[in-house]
Amino acid sequence: EMLQQSKILKVIRKNLVKKCMELFTELAEDKENYKKFYEQFSKNLKLGIHEDSTNRKRLGELLRFYTSASGDELCGLGDYVSRMKESQKSIYFITGESREQVAQSAFVERVRKRG
Image (cartoon, rainbow, N blue to C red; front, side, top):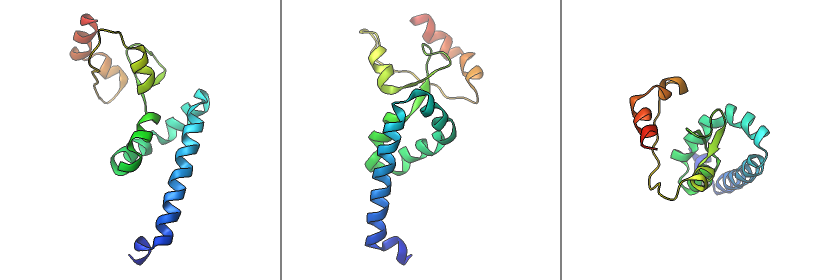
């Protein structure tokens, strides 16, 4: 418990997190390498969203999702928003056990019919 309260360790932690965030952002620029990284560490990034409120926005930019338009490619939220139609006011999402299960959902079918 004394180690958790140590100012030196807090500084070390802050600098490590800062450096990791810089490296993750740099890695995200290379789609192929980031895809490999994301396959291994996506759960950790998603957990970081909940646990690290100071870096939540930066971590959110690193998350990738499958979309109805992206097919088998993962897409970042910024890319998705840039491709949205002018008339689209909302972003709908669904979670499930697998992509196949989600694709067969009645909810997804209704949204696709609406355009």
